[in-house]
Length: 227
Length: 185
Image 1: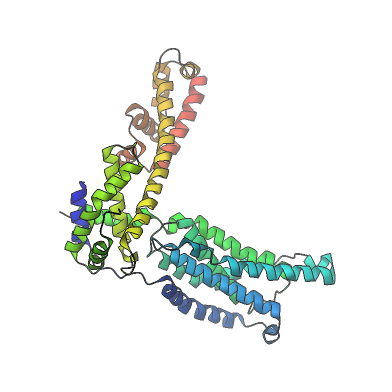
Image 2 (image 1 turned 120 degrees about the horizontal axis):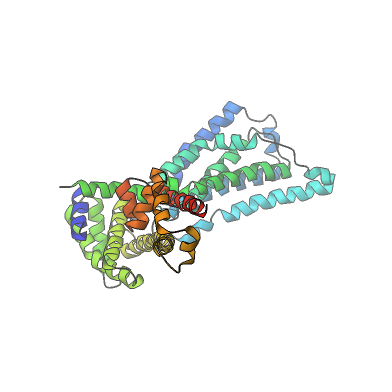
């Protein structure tokens, strides 16, 4: 097809579009859907009996806020990454809260070592964490995928990794409201580990969820079928 | 791109997003020559037809994600990001295609030369080769015939046969392995 013909057909078949909202607005919409769902899962799973006491535990509060902030920052970065011309420094937004999260857990590990010795760093199986994080992060993950597909697939793997990190971060935040596992090494290995695994799996799925071919194919087909 | 009037393009794009087809056509017509020049400057080794393919791919990409443009922001940087992203994608595809086509060219040299070709001597005479090709499973034989004998590109062969590029690569790889085994007996 000649380019001039393509131009004419693209113009003739172009319908009005709904502009993408700014990343901050999209983040708010995503949280408005995700947070009630997380709260519902926590209620269904029954909040941990020592929750009131945990609110007085500084390390619990820091780690929860850091997990939540990591999820929110990653969500914003994901929404920004599908807008051509966005400030690429936004991609680094999840790093500070993530380092706070890791730092708090590392400090907890050191404290356990000092108080209890090597036994304080023993790792036991806790296979509940990964499926629980997936369950709590499921609706945020699905809604994130649908919302990201409205943008431009500029960096598919990085975008979906950020989306996965966002959903899993929120998932971990919810998990610790009903799963009474607070040993720093256990949280580090099983919970943060699960969050990173979800982000890695999401990155692998990048080109299947976000790719130019699927969105261009529709436009190409329409332009080709114009008489 | 610096020669284009960004404020005019912003206005046209804003109208195009609202459904003004004339504004949209004017926008695309205005940016196309600049795109063509930019792509041919960055990809001097490409033929005219390939450059035009890239221009059309950028236009289709812009069309597909026109909802992501914010009229409060400059238009040209938005367009440039899309253009560079698509050029990078095309370069990766070209690199993969060139690597596979090179493999195909080496195979053509190996199997077509009758004399003084070490690979051909290893694998046997041309008549035995032809017989071995005919004994290949249908998918492998078809892949060899299209890519080696008719020297189609992977994309052309995929379009002609309805087989995906990935499946064609697998068939050719297996065919070569089968032929080596057969002709070394």
